[in-house]
Length: 156
Image (cartoon, rainbow, N blue to C red):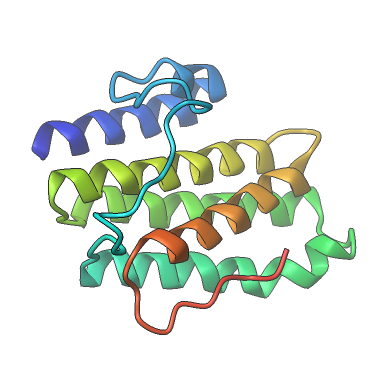
């Protein structure tokens, strides 16, 4: 578990330093994103812990606060940068402090990788709104695959 968290933290740091190319080569990769898919735990949602639930609630809240302005094309580059930084900080907190069983952790990383990609796009010069949509989609998948009482996905 420590090695998994260390690799993910390293990948996040590299992603911040070198952009999406570093994330594509991360040592904790789960294979080609087109072939690795989220799955349930024998038909049930994966367990969560308080740190994960708190972090995901905070990411959802940040996206909900920004959602209308993003869809109305009223979000500025500075606002995208600030939102991306806020989301990245929550992802870092979850990666560093969340304690899930190995299989649940692996599934969570599939969701977090989508969010990390979305953060990178929001920090880019074009397609920032598509990055935000990736995060909204990842939040929806989180709710579909992880046991989080009262979870509500955001509308796309």
